[in-house]
Image (cartoon, rainbow, N blue to C red; front, side):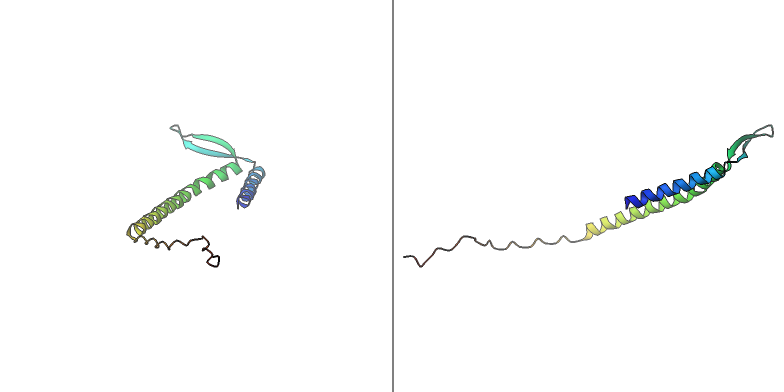
Amino acid sequence: MQIIRTITWIVVTAVLVAFVAMNWNRAPVNFWPLDNGNYIHFDWPVGFVALLFFGLGMLPVWAYLRAVRWRLNRRIASLENSLRATSVPSMAPEAAPAISLETPTDLTKS
């Protein structure tokens, strides 16, 4: 299973690198307005800009799904603990009488 996960991450990385390499044209990005009417200006490659905003858009969804998973794991743990607390422990089975492995004495010898 680990090999499949590794191969998947290698493929995703290769696709992202190819995307950035094909979109290497620089685009002006006005980042923050200043008091004098100008902007803080960056010239970034289009691929980086696209990946940055894709990551920023995916961040809230990822955080929400992590919170849901955390909440459900806590709920499952709570239910398991309440079940463990209310269940009656099973009685241990009674011990069987010991069987002697000694050979009986030979009664034919006299």
